[in-house]
Length: 433
Picture 1 (spheres, helix red, strand yellow):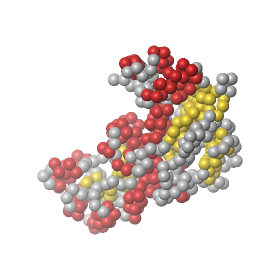
Picture 2 (cartoon, rainbow, N blue to C red):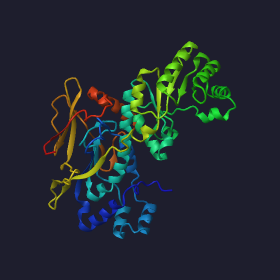
Picture 3 (spheres, rainbow, N blue to C red):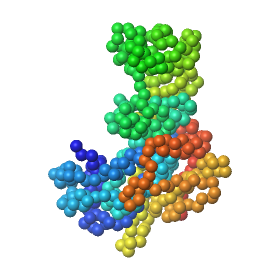
């Protein structure tokens, strides 16, 4: 089985290379930028996620024997292009926003500097990873913001593709989720994992009491018992009778969660289980989490809405050529001008303009040169790849810490769930927007 990531791309990436090799444009120095023209409708900020996964995939972006045989057999490109692909190694530079950073319309999330052929072939790989992961991370950020200091658990593996489940768990953890149910995400990325039992475990036993007793015997009194298979009130009474005051938590997965949580809290307190937590699941999203803030809930388990971006399954990012060398070797800005899909030519740099208290006021994008720091600003661009070698920290833990800090510097209105405009404007300097 091949480990190459080179065929995780579109057919036309390779046919462009074939034509560029014939025209001589393949080696022209170019700058590509990955950015979002706009945020999903109503969203106030985006979250950069997937950079670490992209850089890991870049290391495996090699057209090995298996990939080359497939391309030759299906006649995707000619022999000369196959020969070029067999030697492909990305040797250019990549910079951009550090993973976990908030972004806004026009933010140069990823800047790829290389020959045309080297850079254009990375378009699909970069977009497929960052569009998915950034969408999940943005949804996760809204959810953890709504949850406050109550932990959120990612549990959407059964609601998406098996590899998307692993990527989603990573993106959710980056944006503040405490743990995931996905064991592969734990192995691959070190995301904490958690889980106890589903309704099937209760149903396979003759009685609910037998199921609870078995789980307690195996996992201890600190476990979480699922109490809504039959009758919640009876289940809570049984759970407390078997586990005593040290019962870790009960989980509610159906019904009016706010009403049930209040009833169960009263029952637990009356039975002497004031320390037993209440975990709620069942098709939660950021709005449901916000509504449950008034209830005695200790944590949230989120699945379908999270792994599908909570209504915005893609971050809407594009990958465009913005600078290329002319026949004299001079770098010239280029831009797409088609209706509703314009781009801004020229290589970009970015900083976040902040007020004297450290709160963000604007996204400043310099065209052709880095914008001037007025004293309170924070540069956003970091080096990711130099001369083909990854130099950035790709750990999800670093991205998690960065996201927390980035979100904290946004205006308070960033936490509003109502639809609105981006919480800070994007300002271009050195060129027309």
